[in-house]
Image (cartoon, rainbow, N blue to C red; front, side, top):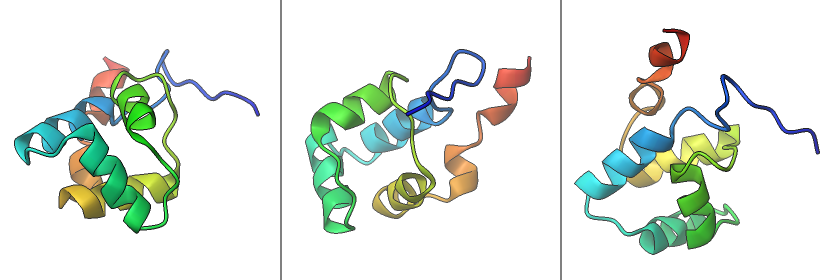
Length: 85
């Protein structure tokens, strides 16, 4: 599978995932469990890799992260502009 990298990043929501997860006092394991309930095959290690910007995020994972964290896609993507500075 071809790796897609944007400005040396595997995803652009890593900081926001971690920020909202911590604000809501949800562990990585709990977030993975919530994602699994929605049908996403993900574990705590994958959440850690996403937060460290070492793993890509699919569109359906983005939608499910939003649902699990109670945020909108715009909130998770709000740092997007910093990648053009």
